[in-house]
Image (cartoon, rainbow, N blue to C red; front, side, top):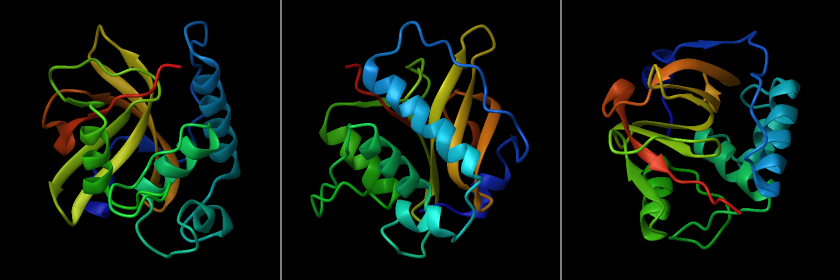
Length: 178
């Protein structure tokens, strides 16, 4: 579940341009995910317009994990809810559980994220959030992210540290390479 407590503290900009992404090392499915993210960002979805409702299967609920689930499915890499088997994982804790069950979870602090990874922030079960990694700067140990339900919008978040505990960052769902 996403809450304004976590999302409001992220450095984000409603009017940011979609960042340039180095594509030479991306797989076909990563390139497809990138195009989907660009397209969705350009639509400027807000809670609870038709775009947001498609992410959440029509449910009016916190939608950061729904955005991650929907974009992954559209890119041909659907997730699988460990409780229902559905492609949609609406909760951040369940999203973390999914990645752990797939041996695709890496704790923050021990891992350098990359494009397509899923950043997972948890403080409490009702104060959690998730975003997708777009770019990483290993020199400054920061990343650029895109997230749903960032103050009710899809937004770009720049210069977010990927250190353990930074803004309640606990780890990453590691992308599928191929």
